[in-house]
Image 1: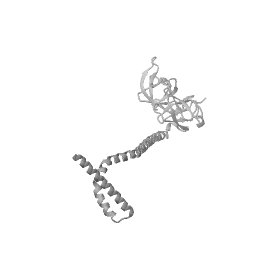
Image 2 (image 1 turned 45 degrees about the horizontal axis):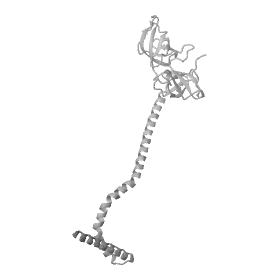
Image 3 (image 1 turned 90 degrees about the vertical axis):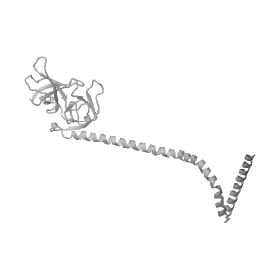
Image 4 (image 1 turned 90 degrees about the horizontal axis):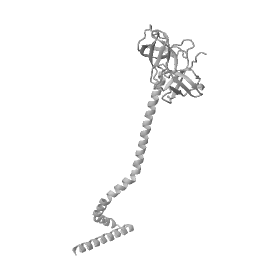
Length: 277
């Protein structure tokens, strides 16, 4: 019974407040001066209700603002991720460019090429199979290259051009089985005959170095440049890695490690030199 009376009074209070609000709005609309005083009283009366409403609705307002701002935040994050990727890409490109400049700088001063003109070429592909020891260059006959021309790095001999088109050249590496060349043992100036022994194997010198020639590990060998040689003289080839006597004891057999880093070729120089007919 008491609860019913309290509910009735609450409803009556609410009706009075609503009517008061309507009255204030009407007076305000008509420009009545008294409205300022009434508005102040009404504000004091409604302030507790307004605080309660704000308290209840504030979390929902915050949630709505969070939802409505999510798209903007996601767009900003995506823009930041894109910019970060661009920066990382620029760093890699700059690093690659610096490496290429370093490789090219090393090819600038090749004393062993002498008066022979050269063309710088980029290595565009390596060996295509495990049984092939060749690389492809981005220069060809249109650039003045021809079959048989030597290919070198700042360290020494890489190989020779074995096939060519207008814009591409295939280079047989000095380590490929069947690659033959004349070499000179630098300390003794003795001329020998060398050949490639295949993937992972050193170059073999198995002719020309007699048993009386003093040879030590680490000795340098260059191209011989003798008559009808397929290479000009004095191109560094490699260093002696091991020595043994031939089966007939008539020669020394040398295992020679190439000086050029054949596994990491970026740029090379092609010597514009062709073997004599």
